[in-house]
Length: 225
Image 1: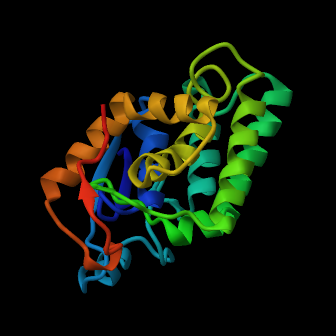
Image 2: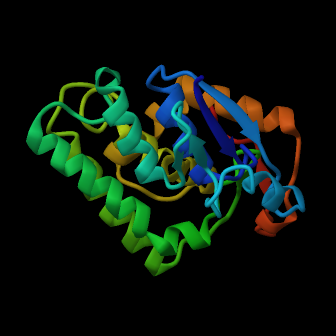
């Protein structure tokens, strides 16, 4: 028996992306199950993973349920310490966990104003002061993390922190949000990531457009490298 992962629409579900990256980017095998957001399928599919109310949700090989992305990250790190979900250095690991927790509970202005949409990018989006404040904080955290390791990701090698911030990078790319050069370089690193290319291809194959994510702005192709 292996892991089973229920995810929402790949083009739109930022939390599903985080959960899936915790498997794919770390080489942990998983059986995927898809559900359709804003449809009658959603509640029915979730009922197979009690007591979960949201996606992503994981059934572990021993039948346990992990129904939150932090729980998924910690569960996989505990079961697969060799996969490298967290930095090995204690101080870097503490910062990584703190950044993941802040991403999990914060940056509500950015997340509310700029829902993830990997089908297209928006032209002419005007970021509010609250969104700009979130972006400033995010860029500061990214710069702090990138002083701790030698490599292209936040802590040198790819970690759970990168998986949690991947949808933020996709928002910055898709809305053309103004960020510092160092933050943009980190966004560009995500745009070349093989796992993200696979995820976006799944979303394109689903070919489902959700009107709930329409910003009413001119559009352009999504800038995936």
